[in-house]
Image 1 (cartoon, helix red, strand yellow):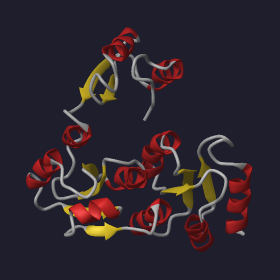
Image 2 (cartoon, one colour):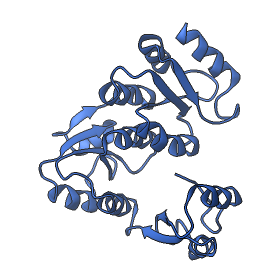
Image 3 (tube, one colour):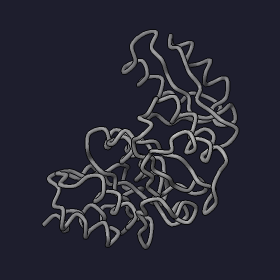
Image 4 (spheres, one colour):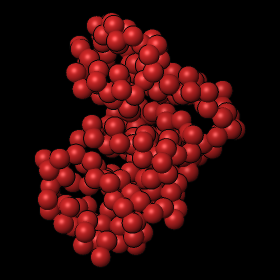
Length: 238
């Protein structure tokens, strides 16, 4: 997962695509032209890659377009999170990468038409509601709802990553670091935990103390995760 500006491909992304993608390979653009402009697609093409745009009329339809394109198991799990704020979706993304699940979005505590249509086509899927708004929208789903975003991420980690020996940690105040980290963590069998910028969230520290992972991968510089957070992580691990 690479992040770029909406109007032009970031130079770091161009370097990474050239390194990681075989010549003539496919790059997936997530979102419509309002999110990633045609100039981004043109720059991808100029690098020698094909591109496939996965997009819908809104964030809810884009999420279903991604789920359809990945040809997920129709009886597999589906993780529902609100599409009106980001934190719950970050932890859910790592779990989805680990389990081969789809992440679909609710309109806060209400149901989005695109999500409803996808669920109607997958009636045997097991539904998980990650966060309070999704649980309100789908009370029949298995609820993973903590007292805040940090506690919800811990519940996701405990549910989908039992006995894990590593953990990822990123800011829960802003989304870019965690958004990039989630897919690679999840595909490696590692959960994503969230914390504040200057203080380790107490519930996150409690998880680290009890789970005792051998490795904690911290994402972002000291502006995202301060030296104080690093010190608290070491303390939690004993």
